[in-house]
Amino acid sequence: MRTLPRSSKIFRSYLFLILWLTLYIYWFNLSNQITGVEEDRINKPDRPIPARKVTIPALWPETVCWVLMVALLCGTPLGKHWFFKNFVAMTISTWALLGASWKAIAPLTTRAEHFNLAISCWAGLLISISDLRDIRGDAAIGRRTLPLVVGTSEFRWMNTLFFIPISLMVLWGSGILSIAPVSLVAVHTFLGYRVMQDKGSYYDHKTYMVLTYTFCLVLATTALEGLDWNGNVTLGVEWLLGTL
Image (tube, rainbow, N blue to C red; front, top):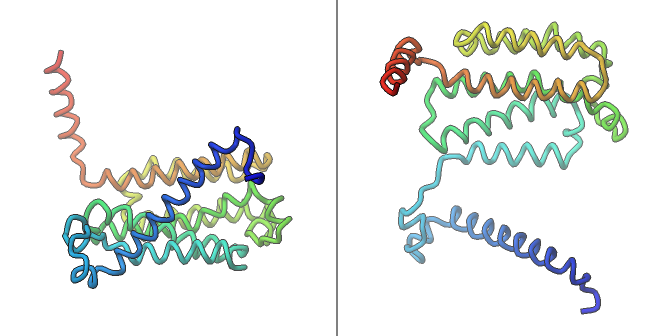
């Protein structure tokens, strides 16, 4: 008992312990029931899955890929190399994220899968922009990011003149660019302009945030495909006039 923290910290410590134990038990039971469906149909048919009270989404490929990428990035030297970190891990992880998100809500269509693959490749091409803000820390721990390998000035030119145009071509090839060409080209042009500005790590961080907003815009753009804008606008105006 003498090793217990002071009374002011005991409450927070117990809250942390309860949370940790809850997550531990939840994960243990969840994984056990997911992997033991066949035996539970015989031994414990009242459990949610064999009783068909809940179903298991077909997310195994995405889940395995996600866990594997995290393990390789955080637990092996591959996570310190620019090619694997950006072009391999980010592409696969984005594919897993988007695919699982879609399949959890609705069946994944062929068109949606094409969009998913295109956006995943897009993310893998451009995510190295985030490395500009972290150059000092990456150099200190020996991480070989692309800006450190080729030089920051060369990297900025490489991104603006090669990676960003290639990423737009990926969106064009998948049909995403044709949905909102002006908006997407404009925001990518602005992104390239910011990448070229060597104004310090804080500015580079803000540029990375522009990249995240662009990612959201690309995702939102895919949801606009097939919408009847004229019809929607007409209905909206009629509804608005009817409320006046």
